[in-house]
Length: 395
Ligand SMILES: Cc1ncc(COP(=O)(O)O)c(C=O)c1O
Image 1 (cartoon, rainbow, N blue to C red):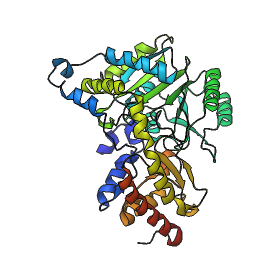
Image 2: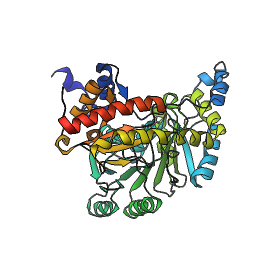
Image 3: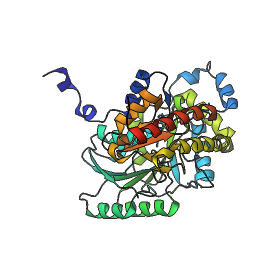
Image 4: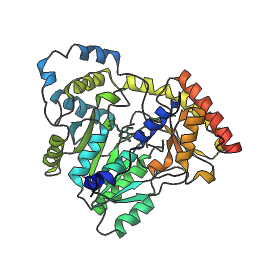
């Protein structure tokens, strides 16, 4: 048996992260600009960074902390959950980002072989988290073709007809990669269907503050609901790695099982990062909203860049930092070639929809660059798409 045969199936049979492929693609394409990675261009609030700078010599910063997170941060988060998210009876575990929060939950709630439900287009890391923990029976439901909202009728049928009943359903709100927002009544219907079926519901609220055109983000709470949040995008803290789970306090045993998983992955989120998270929370949500409102200009630039694809090709932009666009029909099975061509020929990187269960589409992020840079990237994208539509992938 060669060395390949000695690697774990859980890893070998998991998709290759699209971001790793994209990093390779961008390195190989001269001077490519990226509209690929889901990032924001801002740094954490200056006041918060200044305070953190003074902490590095304190011994406690270099020690382990409580698995569930620093008490002061958890207290601040409980207050935030109450005031901003209307979550009254949740407990909190602080994690090393929302991705780690998701893995914690999959390991806590699912056994290998369980079936789970997500909706296309889905968040690729959530899909991979299932795959690599042995939860390989992943039922992918359709989104409404016009709104990309999860199809609740399909969910109702699937939860009642699949035996054994799927263990867990997950949605991202607002969506990555869809960039659309699940309205409150639909979220409540999904929750009620899960509750009736005895399935858990994980809602990933990473982009809670990224709402446009007067839309308002809402959360729901019940004993079968787990809410995930992140400091990464809102406070520009991607590299600091802080997220958290709001979970139902009244479910017997849930805290204990969650802490077992937490203790075996990060032990605790980085202590200095938790301090930065706390100071950032003190600066408050208005700071985040002020950063987010400028993204509308980037969205406008990129909507124009996507116009060669036709008037009905683009979705998203309601929330999060994404537009989701349909390529001409002949590229349905080959979106990665188009992405690779755009990077090499036109110096612009976007994500292929096939990475999210949406072949033939591309995901464009409008958060990663300031307006001036976005304008340059948008011009490259528009030129590339005009050529794609008119002449194909000319080399
Ligand atoms: C929906 C969603 N969840 C989680 C994450 C990861 O966030 P974090 O940096 O907090 O791990 C991302 C990042 O792109 C995301 O889009």
